[in-house]
Length: 99
Image (cartoon, rainbow, N blue to C red):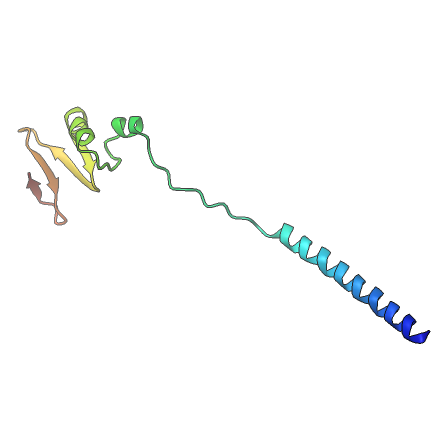
């Protein structure tokens, strides 16, 4: 009889511990801050057409922006059109490099 009582008490203690552990872990998971990583903003074609400072890989769009704004960024490098209608970009030292 005492063995059965001892086993019953141990089962109750074990179940209470599991119950407490379960709710403690649930509470910690809900209090964690969730960070949402959003993909980088990729401008649409219309936005690229009206802003020559957005870098593009599209050669036709680059030529269009050069004609319209007299400057355009192509593959990370800004090209300009001079007063003599020649295309150039600025080197790291600030010199004009004509194409």
